[in-house]
Length: 233
Image (cartoon, rainbow, N blue to C red; front, side):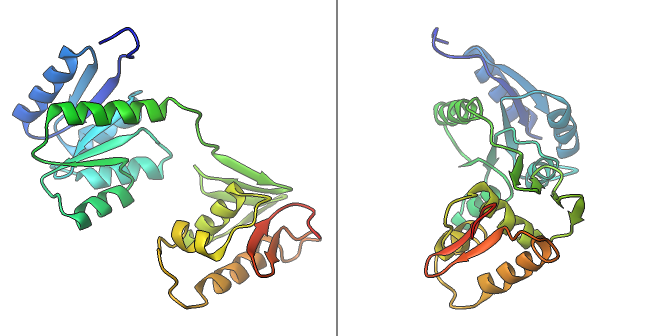
């Protein structure tokens, strides 16, 4: 390692012992700390209890597959960057891995030099400013980790898509959010399905966060999109 590089603490979740030992040895030779887990259950337990810079996760594991490990961690609010290693390298496989919560996806076979470079990028990204876990607009509060939404003293019950919609709007509080932005970031559409899906969900969300309260927070900006803001008239 050069003086400008920082030692990383890595967790390698890989059931092929020979491959796992090779990776651990290679990372240690360049100055990093590497720990091993031989199956998904052990990997999940170590990832939950340890403080790692990056997780390197084989996709096909005994006891619990790699995507399940990552998905469970994300569901519990663990945002440790995870790079998925897999012999499944088709586009659909990579998309599935990333949507499950993976931060990067490297098909097998791979070169260690490329793996090291990708892990270093993920580690640097993780060392930046952390993303907010609680958003507040007026007396509306959304907790991203517990998936709890409160308006004043009232706890609101939202469906998963409604939660994602509100989360995105609150992340951009005070800004106009267009239909295209919502389609791409809440529905993962990169085309207009020509349906009223957004209008329906906005209406449902508005009835849950504004109905019965004296001050509306969710506003339609005619011809532009939507905005969450306290005190807009």
